[in-house]
Length: 399
Image (tube, rainbow, N blue to C red; front, side, top):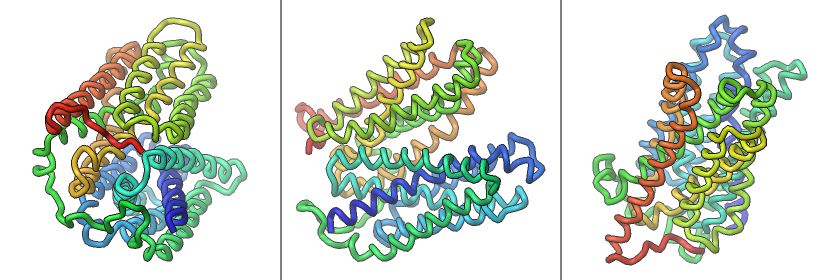
């Protein structure tokens, strides 16, 4: 039972990543068909992101009322319906209608699954699950590219991923009884105290502001590297566009391989140690990007940043019940997800505006400042937790 439910959760994380890169991969073929300018994708993307933030903030209430299994199944069903809707859309304005279930489904399932795993499974599974998300995020654009190169069109790409999501939806609904059964020795049921916390109440919790800012900073770094890394290589370092497009994949490769590797050492190192190591490796990678050295150093820097990013997101999530208590973990998990989405949505355009006005040379400096802020916030968080524990070191989970 434990392994079967875990396998379903792994599939759910792959499913969570599948739609993430579809709009970007399909848009060059979509916008001419709809008669809109290339920049029109931004409004659709922002609509999806806004709905994701809203559903993350509301996830605590939904999960307390309906349970993790039902919320996950319905959320995946909403995403599947949205993808099928995208596949039959012929007018630009209709994309905004389907963007609503697209975003609302993504935020709830993300918060629900992350908290469920943080409460009931070992740290290694959190790393491997987010590695599975990376596989899904990689596979989605590949499926879209396959459909485009074989003359099937972008509609077929959305349809294929939508059908896959509906298959997973059926599996999730069939698995609903399993989510309420005892799955670990520490299993304490679907709910804790059953009480939801308001955002003002969450913000008064010791360390909450610090972890939210840290999450915002992490997602800002990840999104800004992914969006503007190639532009920095071409516009400032003189790398050819073809090379830059290929080299930015090193960043994502670093994240995927890093999370796979972290799963093997998560039982030996605490979440705090993994987060610190990741932050240091990110700073080293950014330093390598800034050094006017050979191109191989730039490539290594991108890989290092990806490897550094790998343990931070899953480790912050997995440490949430230990930092804020099992009763409050679902409440703060949703706000953490919302903070991460705000960073990944709004920081990249701000970075783009700054480097567009003052020059691409500022790009790694901005990233360095955000990474340092993340480091300071996590250290501040652990200092608060040490005080709460009477001056002793915080003992984050060590499986």
